[in-house]
View 1: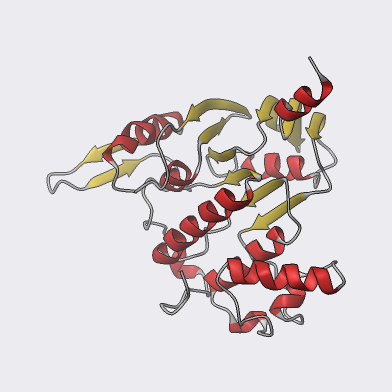
View 2 (view 1 turned 135 degrees about the vertical axis):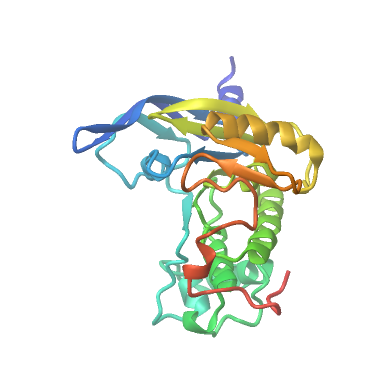
Length: 280
């Protein structure tokens, strides 16, 4: 096979025999995984299952993993966390440009802020932003570096339900424009189904389910054809659904797993909420 052809089909991420233990407990148990270039992948699992550990290993932030994790372009990887991690003493544009200098970088930073709906907020301080706006700024910071691989560790978990839906739409639009490989860690089954083209379930340190979501975008939470995927993922997570006599759905199973969007019990303890005037 010609060398340039091999380069085109080479995975963005390739893991072989990845192992990680903490205090004698195995969290990642010999994981083999390929993430193709340009694919949007979501990773589900129980609380404490090692989802974030796997993401940190892929990001190169954990140097005590065993095995091999290979990135095609390790210098062009961006990470978005649940906390926006904006520096409070830096204005929004300065946060986006952190580590970058020059007029061209500033132009890219302004363009990235405009792309996430924050045009005109360049001089704002982080404490003047709502929770959703702060996450938009974090996305802009990742975009300005033109990543080939975007790693997202529950980036919308601290947001209210309406803001999460808006952010889902924004993230998918950004992916459509830029086409990085994406690995999204989430505890929300519906978030995974609506956003990703492939969903992995991490179970006892291994990939327990590798599911392709074969539905066109944009997707709706109300699409009944997504129900089969939802049931398979919940079953892989050990969650059972039931219907009460009022016709509403219930979920029995695992702490830390959302079976439906908008039912995130964590929202009321987070101090930042999106305002209705937030764009998009």
